[in-house]
Image 1: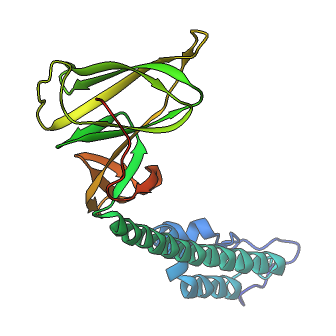
Image 2: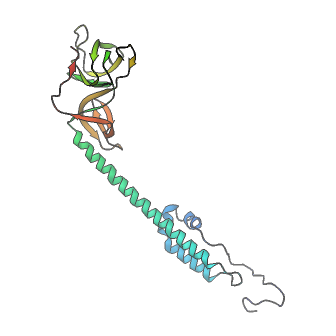
Image 3: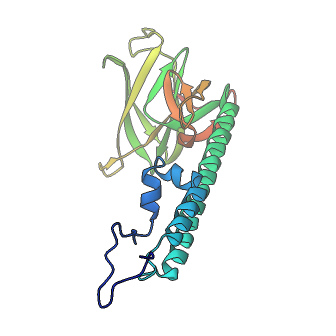
Length: 240
């Protein structure tokens, strides 16, 4: 009997009916290592599609629109993967540029948000008072011991407090990290929040971190935390 011929009034019964399932992006990617396989095996996909066309059931041919849709979808997935690779490259370039930009801060004195400053001969905090206040300033070492405490009238605006390391009794405190706490009240006795910034020298940059980290007095900061670069020999208020 010739292939494809049938007995009168009897439907053909093929011993192994050809599959009518069309390959999808999931089918091709599952054996090719995920998304990367889709982009690397486009020719394999076309070969599979051509083979299926050659071996389809002539009595139940597949819709050609399905083939077109599959080709379009596959091409779109491949293009998206290439776009993702390009975006990854751009992100890496941007990270490299940010790291390079961080190098310009080495050796510069900068101000960043914070209340803990490094004392090594002097320690500087920048204060921003929203109005005139009567403030109590307390400076403590890393163990919580009070190194200095004093009252000060602060005018509204920016103010720098430079501590020379001497306690209230004149004792010279050692090098280390010191935290400032401010309790402020206005003329009506209402509490007023006074934000603080710490000021210090950028002594190194960690380029292995992402984003790059600036080391200021043993503390690490990112470049977006820098509020200002301070000119050398800039002076402000003192504890005395």
